[in-house]
Length: 161
Image 1 (cartoon, one colour):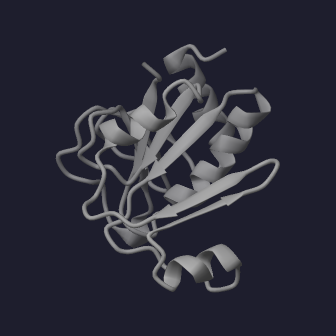
Image 2: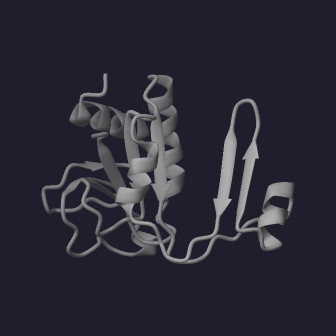
Image 3: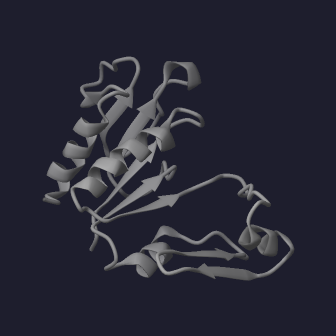
């Protein structure tokens, strides 16, 4: 099974921004990643590109393909669970990163900004924290400028190199 780790935190805590920097390091080390991002709300698609315009017009499925990338928009009658999504990507990547699955079954790195809320309560499998203020609960903590260190932490944890 492909290893997985979750980045969790309050809305606007900087999860995606920080994760972009971590993924750049992992990619430079030739580690293939997949990100499964959870949203509590519908996605807001821009109308700037043909694919988004076709989907917003009501198409059930839009599949855009090019020599180096494909993109699929598909309407769902209910939210897909992580097991189903994992089945689709198994074998294509070395590491799966989930974002926003606070109750998911994977080890978690909590991203916390004092301005957007405190630490999350009742997190299971918390292995590290990225924060602008230290916690006193013994969890390994990193600052927002330590994306390289978090990338190394993940690589060492899952023995990816």
